[in-house]
Image (cartoon, rainbow, N blue to C red; front, top):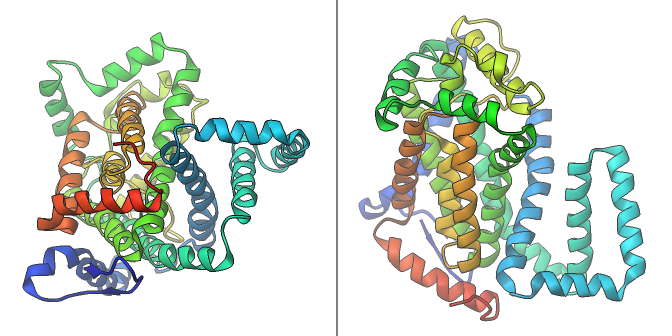
Length: 398
């Protein structure tokens, strides 16, 4: 894929030298063409849960992604960024009471997490309104919307194909093998053993924090897309999505070859010892039930957000891709590196993935990035650093 730094137009070259960069386009098209015939042949629904998917992606995830993007931009754009915001509130104390009242109302209508996200996004939007004109807003929307639509389309394919795979491949076929590999890697220890030691030794609020980190991966991905499109243009945004979808398509192939559910599936005491107050408890129970229903060919009403791929761990693939595409942002890179450390801990202690899943995810991330950037891997990194300095007025630390 070739894009101009001064234009949002994107052209797709079809010569042999550029095919790895365009792999995700051809893979997406091929999977889309084969989807309906496969669903009908396997007696699966051709209807998606449009209400849930559209609301979850375009409303919930978008709001959270905007918040994370604003926070990362604040961290990156100025060392004194947080202090500037604080001084602004101190100078206009009346606004503080209005914001708190707005937050209280939203908390009553929604919940504290949703209220916090909407409040921060509203404040940021009003703050930026005086500095960003309509043309600037439309230019940003034009840069972000096509990659966001492409990502949504690709995720629909992934959700559909992981359902297809589970109707023809037993979902826990390789759990025992991956658990054995983990014990070899960890010198006799296992993810279930580590998880349940932590459950007995650590307070529940620590696991709530781990859930915040684990499920925060999706807003981080959305923020990466927003910042990439905003500062590097639509072309680079499509490359970002291309890397993510390349990772997902490779994950589908590996899931078909070595299907597994995760360490919680084999653990005999997981659901008797794991805290029931955690969202993960219900999600893991639902994942096993959903996978079992697909394997038993029970009637499925529609395709939804259900995701079953354990090997490789896409939860580590996507933040690594975000970190690569924002590599020139030094402070953001450090924040994301720290986030990934906590994310690996969350993946293990919440018993979602084997260690071998995470290692495979790192390999998939490298392959996906290389497939998109190819020989320009290092040149793109240097060019990105120059462009982000121009966009942020030279505020990126050296």
